Amino acid sequence: MANTGKLDVEVKVKSDVDKFWNSIMDSATIFPKVCPDLYKTVELIEGDGKSVGSIRMVHFAEESAYSVIDGDMMQYYKSFKASLEVIPEGEGSLVKWLCEFEKASEEVPDPDMIRDFAAKNFKAIDDYLLKA
Image (cartoon, rainbow, N blue to C red; front, side, top):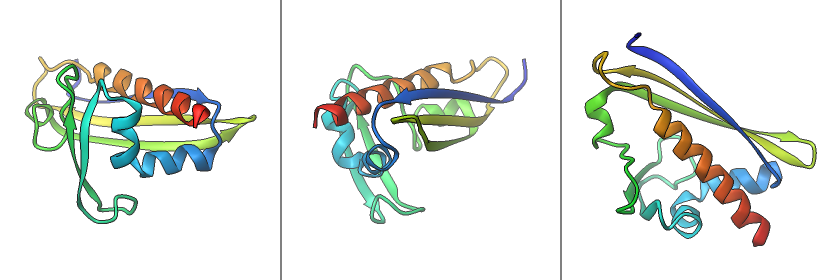
């Protein structure tokens, strides 16, 4: 088993690119509304929340098991970099999520749970936007 790897997921959504991307950029407001079972709050710590370098403090709901900054996750991964791309596809969009990681040890599992968590978020955001 390698200590470095990549995982990706593609999710087809019905929302248009701009609307979907804007909801991602407004995560501090949107995520707790869309997925209250996953997010308690998202606080903007530094920056405007939309620009490179912005820092958010995510407080996950008790039912969620996902930590990002200086949390449990960093005990298992030496590095973890995720990227997101939203591209037009038909009348909707294709959301592409990719992560590159280096595990702290060979015993650490690949971050499949994080990939699945991201995909669940994208579907929930799309459902929310379609109802709005």
